[in-house]
Image (cartoon, rainbow, N blue to C red):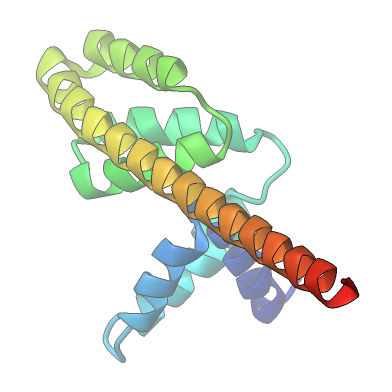
Length: 158
């Protein structure tokens, strides 16, 4: 596989795991200074490591959450809590990972990670609720339009 193919595969996986909105923000914020780094993480973190067959995406999320929490990489932890949900982990599984971190990396690291994860889970729930509300509103509008159309047809038929 050449670097172009690796970058293409990496961008696909990155979007699937982190979501289009996050990736679009990161790409649009890319500058000539940060472009080599964006290329590096797309090709190697996403196109190589996250694409390997040895672990499933949920398993990779478990490992990533534990490492980020232990190393106290707060911004990345927030992003990967949301990604873990997208990869199929439950809040309960995320909780278990952070409890494991408390024992092996220390209570202060886990304490901070719980706070970050709780906030990220709430943000994800709010976003999901907003998406459901938007979808319900669109469905309602479509139903009203169909009823109006049927009423107009009935009126014309009379």
